[in-house]
Image (tube, rainbow, N blue to C red):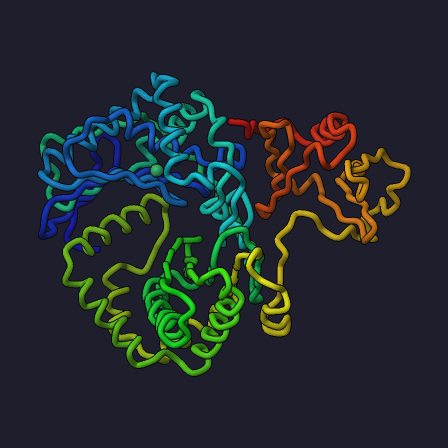
Length: 489
Ligand SMILES: [Zn+2]
């Protein structure tokens, strides 16, 4: 990006542009859901809320957003007001160690109010299915542990990440004299993970309503391919087939080279299975025959409109700053617009074709008869359940000599080997490997919620075992205490 100045302001990088329109300024930190260990999931978002609480009251238009990779505080308006807000945010970060328990409790409530279901029980999204936890899969994983995060954990998290070397300031105007952002010194220690990718389309059972599609594509094409697919899915599923009302698009940067594009569809429950079949058929058809002339024109015109919009250029400045902060390269915003303006049916088709193998389709399993789903030759299936068929080669195939807890209804029993929790019922035994467990939550009624490396969860409670207390004890003995959290509110 040209035409802007880069300086250091009190040890923090500051980028200023001269853009038309009202001034906006941001203070961003390079930390998000993907940096959180499983025991601290949700802590970045909670910290963002606490900081915003500490700067109240605020008179200038402002916002704070936590994503998978960043926390961004933004204000719009008079440059001095914008600077004042950012000064206050930094000042609040500096006195975070003095936060009261009352503020922490209040902000846990507001995080809960923002997304009650995520707060109440483990919930997995498409990124969790694809990448597991911790890491980028945490971006749409909800876990009840937020309620038990401590004051000290929030303070330590801030000290680790809300520091001058992990922050960047942007202004869409020259920075005002009144800007005086002072952050605690420090450098982040960011781990980069190697991501295992899915390269065969897969159909996944979900506890969420409706149907959702996910593709992982090159970051440079993500935005306009997502827009083109939005037009095609609306045309087919809404207007031709009358199956849905809306298609919600969510784009998430996954790593240096790629983005996830996700589409959330909203069929009536009775139309869920048909929506699964027809959305897969639509993607396959488009990858063979190309995008419609109307879609190509819509993508081009939308890029023209964006180019004319002043807020677009502010968002380019901001996105470039995040790239700088995270030490990575991206296709520039202007280049993206040029590519979209030149898009053709064939260029879009190629972009889809190259990435169709990464397709994940999630559907509300409560509303679907398995026989109504597409044939396994079209798409593989994943039950997404932590219990796996017990492998014969597991070493301890015979569990008869091991301690065993019959269930209360007498229909099954649980056994424990040194490495596995095993359920023996009349059918083939199933098991969970302790080594795969990433988080154990102790719930209000003393049950255990086990969450594995793919974000799959199950709860073991009193109904699962006579003498449940001894089983509970035996399981906890095999789990490192560092991954046990309190899920009771
Ligand atoms: Zn929030």
